[in-house]
Image (cartoon, rainbow, N blue to C red; front, side, top):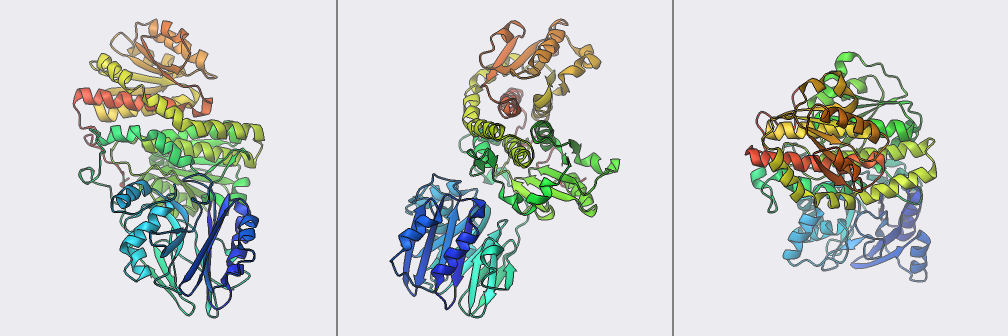
Length: 602
């Protein structure tokens, strides 16, 4: 997580801003930079590594000015280089900006700005923001910021200054902490109160959507109208050449995983950095039990998380469907943490459960994709999945973002407890490889398209799995059901003999998710039960497993990875299978009948 520091007043700004950066450095960083202003003269200095490296560059330069902004960076977009270090400037070196957060639509903004003639020098998401402000700047910095923010999706806590509108700092916040310290004829801005405490007793915490204009003598804060959470209309969004949004979003699944983990993995420490949880780190150490609440596809992600959290974090975890949770009168106490998982953050049943848990006074934590949603506002803390907009009603890439986030949450809690360093390193290392492995899985699309043609005439399907891939079986069944309108059911492999086997024959195929994991032999037994009753089986197996071909009718493969991470690969194949089946059946793939993207009624 990055941190910003700023000062404007009558004193020398450099020592105050540098001290602010130093006081916020406890969270870790890999580079730093500062911009100092004296009238129309601006000097920017950056350094990779520790703050001492920046201080050495500043030595003997006699840089004096009464306004400055600084930044310490934890790399998320782009490598650890001076070019990628904040503050960033526009083409004219007029506007300078330091930012904490993630700009989700930066690539879209960057492509557009480049076409308009803007030149970029870094790999970061932040640089798109400073060029967007430049686009709208006509002498009034706060007006340019206000217009730019209307085009930005993501989180931000930034401070910006302009040579052509001097003696002014503009600060803005959305879901990223930003505070302003007030003293006589001076103001200090920072991400953390520790940077302000030595200089000011009065502190204002900027709220979401607030924009502050700060001069040596005045502070003005305006609040932009909070945008309504509306579903994007497919006709006005871009399919990027794909025939359906669903296929586009399946193809974006590796990117969804990449976005979720970017800047959050700490390989050397065998841990993760989830800045949204910093304020409750100690509370989470004291938690003895987890309840995960979700609906639909998010519910299946939570069930995968249940296995992860119990096996690796050593915490009792239970999963509840939002619509049922309130009616069983859950017994909770102060050592319980309730985790709410939702793509939209507006799911009515999940929100109702959240409100009930808040009334009971327990810690509430949200995992969601939409910044500024009701869930993000009402939970005590949260983690964004960063999956980007999802247009198709059937959720795909958001599921991958949720799985990646739950895996990181598991490492976070596990390393607080008894997870060994070597295990933490292993999970983090394997998780970092998943985006590339997911891209390999997507190369199977032509093969899956052929399999869909082979299975298109069947009207009923079972999906089976065990342990981590049992929820994947449920997700696969749901996807095929909701977009093809076929009868599908998902089961734990061991449940077949308790009833479902009665339906098995040559016209009732089963899709078995059976990677080479701790329950593989059990899954083989379940497959043999199906084959003994003349059932057809399409298996999802691990690359290199040739033996499975002798047992099943068809097989598609995923690369080898940790057992807990296999759902992130196996589910991609099931999403593709559901999509190609629906194409052959001619259904309305992006808008299946009777369904809505965000279920905002109970």
